[in-house]
Length: 209
Image (tube, rainbow, N blue to C red):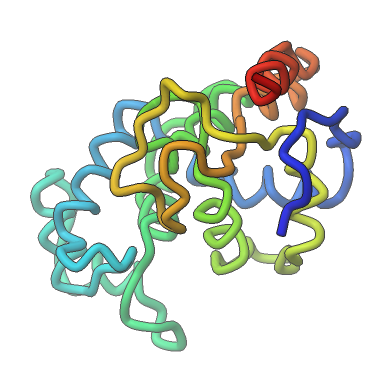
């Protein structure tokens, strides 16, 4: 679906598509990495059937455990009347983050992506992230991203999971230990002007052996 996983020189990321992805993360990125991990772990515990969604009662329970307001009105803010009465991890984090203090821009973006980094390896299951971006409602005034735009922005930052990575449950798409991943630290460094780094080249050499 995504073509070769060999390291490629990334396309410029100062495009409208890149700006849109950054926009998707602007609220979520206000979470500290430790907060992201706590919320993610709590979400996974409540998601008993591992389908990636929880309902109103689950969210109320989670908010209460986190010491956050959990009244019916508070829970309703996560479930607009016109939207499904279930919520994904990305949407939950995005809602909780709106009340938390922001980080620096590059740290904000890295923190947002870390919500999907199950083993803190700097790698995200590509299919899981792509699906989240496609199914998360855009901010006011923004249009939804297309699959082609997401693939364009991610190109050059994808590859096979490093051998050292440990995937919980084999990843959302069941890729296993060597599934295709998005190397978000390289992407963030590129956004921040730090260049593409050497991770892609090293991984390309590894794939040759």
